[in-house]
Image (cartoon, rainbow, N blue to C red; front, side):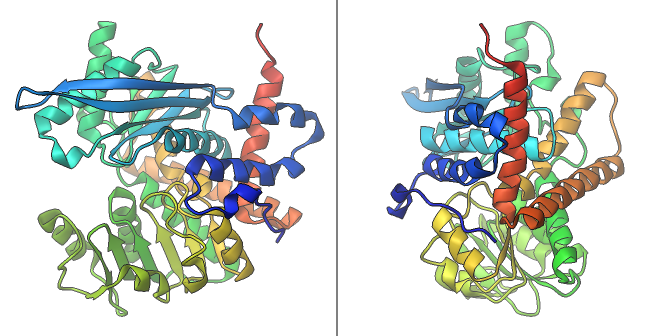
Length: 427
């Protein structure tokens, strides 16, 4: 496979997510059709970035201020689509990168959306439920100028869930004077949410892993799985792998890591996490250090936490055959090169975790039409779209001798730039 070009700034430690994204675009530039090259600069510049102050009254009566963001990266192919995360480390650089990855991701699976993302720099664990609701409603009011079912449609992300989406939908609807269920996805079923949405990202991870396994001759049944991050995505991926006969041999979350060569009972681990607040102390497996987690021998490694988890410092120790990125941006460009040189196949985030936005699209369509599908129909449609997307990226990868990541960016960027070129500039 062709080596990835890395700009000189990526030799520094602690490279930010936006710089990682820009490096990925640089890898694509030599492979873009000549007539699209004049438009490639649009990929390097977000369409708009909104920074807002989010003041709320705490239960104590004090007023606290939090910083919020909503970024539209590119809307050439449709309205903005991307999640909202609540995290104490959220930055504008991170949200810009996440919005850009959403642009590419939506194009890769041919969902008619542009890329958007949002976040609030807050530790939601330190807020009461009432404070969390006030934060959500105030943040929604501050970014309301961007929202709309045909303009910008948020969804859950780290530390946000169905309830948060319900508050966003209600706040937007109150301002509009009508119920607008299509303004968010990932809602409760009672408010127009879609069956299958909760597991969609993890299911998409499994589908792309299965397709990669078929290409590489790796059987799923009996395969060893390691999952980093045991939230919504990681838990669903681990569970669905187990349902198909694989062994989950290693798990990690922010509280600790676990290993059991004969296989961890995912349901028991999930129940323990719900009760104890994390995996630490789970009796069904041996405790493992964070460093040793990355060294655990496995067939599939699923990083499903946050960005920059696989770096130049641990990529050489990873003992996996296939890495399937459940998180956004979990692998740095330097680590990408190391994995590539070691012959480890990486199914990139813009393909592997696109199951969530795909079923979000299904939810949006169902809300618009007021006609809802069964969970079996949802899963069948998701499987088809993800399988077709994987195989098209695989074919480009093999035809052009590119990594799957570069091939995915070539395909996604070409679709975005074609839309940009056809639309032209106004005025």
